[in-house]
Image 1 (cartoon, rainbow, N blue to C red):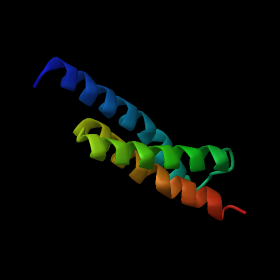
Image 2: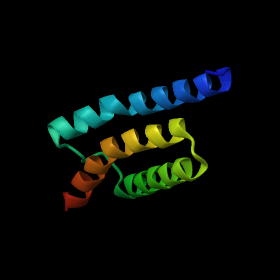
Image 3: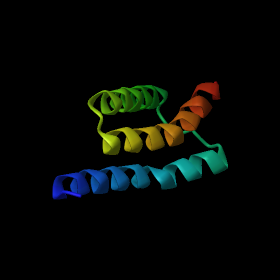
Length: 84
């Protein structure tokens, strides 16, 4: 594997895993009080668009990182939307 791809996979892994502690905390406590709905709507939309982009250009690192983060962020968005 060439070094450019290694950098891409490392960056994808770190940014995706950095989101994991927040996702675990919010999902386990169901406390979304301090979370901005608008921010999460924008974030999840951006992740979905990055996923589509990664698929269209055939970049596995971009696609997988954004798919995994989307899987973690979507439940949080849904919880913030249910919090009325």
